[in-house]
Structure formats: structure tokens, C-alpha cells
Image (cartoon, rainbow, N blue to C red):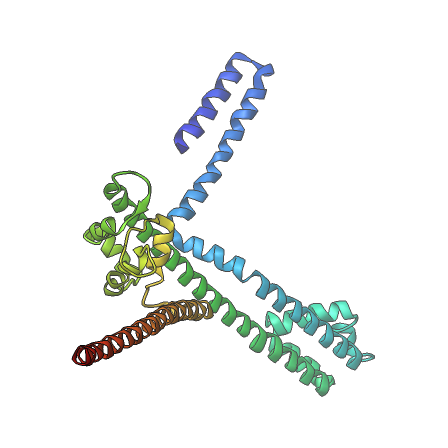
Length: 322
């Protein structure tokens, strides 16, 4: 593509020159704009080299921290510039190094941040004003040894965090793609919904299982949770529920061994336990009502049997008297 873009422009340009078609250079300008499409190669290069994307995302994530650190360093430079300008007022080093606040900020930036000629600057300032040398040394310690090293630590931590997030995102995307490919083969009705039967067949696909293991999904816990995923009634007797692919993958990725319990998980467990407790209480209340009804029926039967027994005892006596 690069060769075609380059040689095409030269051929067209030569054609224009040979035939002296000066009025047609508008088309030539448009063709030159096509050369800007080469910039898209950088985008493809970044997509192919994930480390470049890590760096760019890390820079974007660190933009706020860097901006705040630079703002704080500007304030520190301004404060030390005012102090040094006041301390060296009337001295030779004052007119040489710290004549104005703005120039003092520039000098403090060179010496304390960029460490430009530190030894000579401290010696020259210290020969005329020891206090000014101590203040300049404090500026060097704060700006270079403290704030810049702190900024480097923040950047390293952010880059590590961004790299881990990007790697995790890539692994999850890879797992979803593999499971989707296996699901498209098993999904005969093409409804992009997975049933318990399709789930059992999916767990026999080696590529899908390998992809889920790569992202840390606990395979044993996944198999044990199948009934919970596809349960379609409250009694746990029917498993006819069909899940959309995205919802199914969200449930599967919740079973990663690296996941930590969150407040949302605790609240979900609390709601589930409350629901089960309520269902158990209702079942116990219904059972208690049935026991009470059965007890009443038993008492009624016992009373009826006693009446029959009394009647049977009275019948022989009446027959003997008659």
C-alpha cells in the first residue's frame, strides 16, 4: 500500500508536467490528501502492539496526577523565588541570580529541578549568603529528591495498574470470543441463548474450557452452579431457563477465583437468604395450618368414635330391659 501511494503520486505528477495540464492540479491536491491515509497505519500498529496501547492509556490515566504535581511544583518554585529574591536583595548574587521573582523562578527551576550546575550555584550563593544557600538546598531537596521521585512512583504505579487492567480485558475478550465461537456451533436454533443442555455440551469444548481456565474461572464451581443458572421455578425442580450470551458470560466471570467479595455481593447474598428464609417461613406456616387442621379433624373423629362407643354400650342395656 505504501508503494502504491508513493508511486501513484509521482506518476500523476509526471503526467501533469509532461502534458502541461495546469488546470487539473485540483485533482492532484486531492490525491495528495490520500497520502494522509498513511497515518492510519500508526493506528493499526498500535492495535498490533499492545504495549503501545498500555503506554498511551497509562499517560492518559496519569494526566491528572502529573498536572497536579506540576501545579504544586510551580507553587513551590514561586514561594522559593520570593524568599530568595528577598534574602539576596542588595547583594551581588541577587543581581546575578535572583534579580526578579520571575527570573528567580527560572533559576530555581534550573538548579532545583533540572540540577543544572548545582555545585557551582550553591557555592556562589553560599559565599555571600549562607541562609540563601540553605534555602536553595531546601528547594533542591523538595523539588528533585521528593516531588520528582514521588511523581515517578505514581507513574509507575499507574502504568502497572493500567497494564494489569488491559491484560485482564484482553483475556476476558479472548474467553468471550472462544465461548461465542463454540456457542455458535452448538446453538442450532440461532437464538443466541444458552440452555442447560447446550451448557453441558459447551463444557465439553476444549477451546472454551481452556479460555475460561485462562481467565481463572473455577471449573468445578461452574459445573456446580449450572442448576442455579438455569433454574426456572422457586422449588428447584425445573431447569428450563435460557440465558442470553452476555448475561451468561457475566455469571460465569463472577466465578473467577481472583474475584474478591464486594458490598454488592454481600447484599445479593443477603437478598437471596432473605428470599429463601421467607419462602421457608411461608412453607412452615402452611404446614402448621395443615397440622392444626389435621388435629381438628382428628379430634372430631375421636369425638365421633366416643359417641359411637357410648351408643354401642347403651344398645345391649336397652335390649335387655325390653
